[in-house]
Amino acid sequence: SEPGALVVCGFGEQRMADVMDQDGPPPNQTLYVCNINASLSKRHRLHELKEKLTNLCKPGEVIDIVALSNFYAKGQAFVVLKNLEQAEAAMKKLQGHELEGQAIKVAYAKSKSNAVEKIEGTFTGYKRVIKPKPPTGVKKAKPTVQADSDDESAPPPAPGFAPPAAGYPPQQPGAPQGYGGAPPGHAGMPQPPQQQQAVSQAPPLPHPILFLENVPHSADSEAVAGLFRAFMGYKEVRMVPSRPGLAFVEFENEMQSGVAMQRLQGVDMQGQALKITFSRS
Image (cartoon, rainbow, N blue to C red; front, side, top):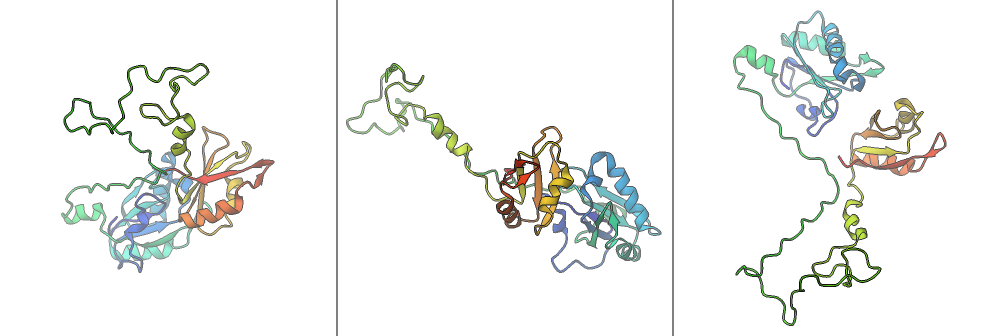
């Protein structure tokens, strides 16, 4: 974002809200607008969002609007005004204005927009932002690769221990295929399924987004939001149309989402007990 561009906020790896200093950047041509209804960030409605923002900024002249529909940029946009005076007037007009039931918030962006740089002749190209990977839980340990016996760097076997011969240990009647007669975890033997699944079943790390299961198929996003809206930091609900019974609920941080999870875990919703966990991504 940059002076001269209007930004509408949502969420993301590096949230677009980060374009602002905590105390607020100085007045410039770039406005930062938050709390826009996420439905307006759907791809087929982006043109409608841009048209609404353009009309709200009139009589100011909008040079450019940047709004995206991806997961990390939804609910956000950059709007570039022609000059500072028009940006100040647009901010007063936009501040608290309701778009589809949500009052948007406006502030000056921290940096200069690409559109303004192009007009000033200082544009040097688009800067690539490397997005950090979200926490996904405990990582699986990589299997160690044993060196060949004829490798000089391989350590010698322990005293009194000889490598098992091919086909050892023999398969015992009634034993699971591949375990032979050796106890689980013996050198050269695979671990039982319970140990193999222990890592993948590790609980996910705290995350601002909650993952809901066992949601009634008849429940819509408004019904789910009715349960979570009362908790501090609530942002939005996202249903999964292709997977009935699943939903995501986003909060501002993992502490707030954790409180909501503890209070609503197993709550009865239309005769079904909700299962709530932290999202893995």
